[in-house]
Length: 51
Image 1 (cartoon, rainbow, N blue to C red):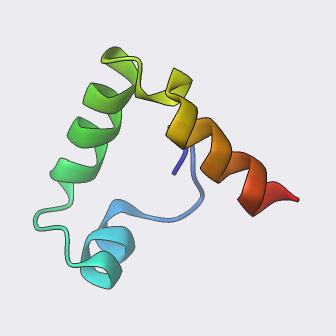
Image 2 (spheres, rainbow, N blue to C red):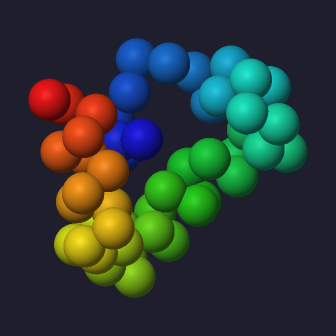
């Protein structure tokens, strides 16, 4: 998931059963603040998805 997506938070939360729509923005923000986008596991996943 990226910080900028054409998909609405409502669709994401309903499709992935994530709770309230505001939780998407909050959790993505926390993920990036914690440096999650630099984690080896995350980078490996992104490479596999984009290949």
